[in-house]
Amino acid sequence: MHASTTAMTLDSQPARVLGLLREQAALFVKLETLAGRQRALVAGEAMEPLMSVLADRQRVSTRLAEISGLLKPVRRLWQSYRARFDVAQRAEADRLVIRTRESLERLLQGDERDARILSARKQRVANLLSEMNTVGGAVEAYGRTTQTTRRVDLVSEDA
Image (cartoon, rainbow, N blue to C red):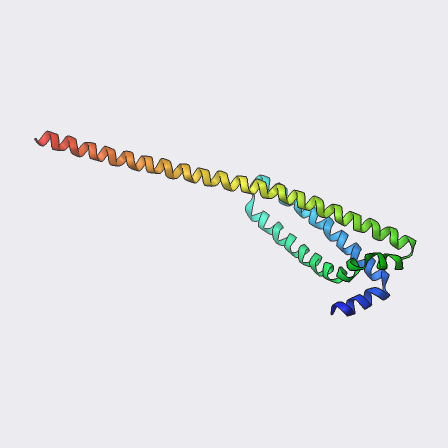
């Protein structure tokens, strides 16, 4: 649907705008639920289920992006659209906008925490691998030292 067509449709249908705001708020609730599952999986280091949750979040995010596109003309002229609502619709729209904003803030904060946890875990793994390489190098060097010492001993015995 073209943006001007969407704007015309939304102009004549405040109920349509409210429907989109309701769907958006419901999707944010779903996204928060998925984020909670994600957080538990990140903490438990369960990678396969985590990938499934991330895929679900992507599907919800895709629909949210579609709704955002439909609501773009509404956001640009929010006060004008808001004035077209009756008192009950206006109160509901205000609640939905506030709830959506708060949900988005919680999601961003949670995702930042998850990213920090994953980053710290990645650094720990990198440190462990580095230590293993260092230990492996030390073991290898020790093995070379032992072989060299043994050759010197063999040469000494022959002399």
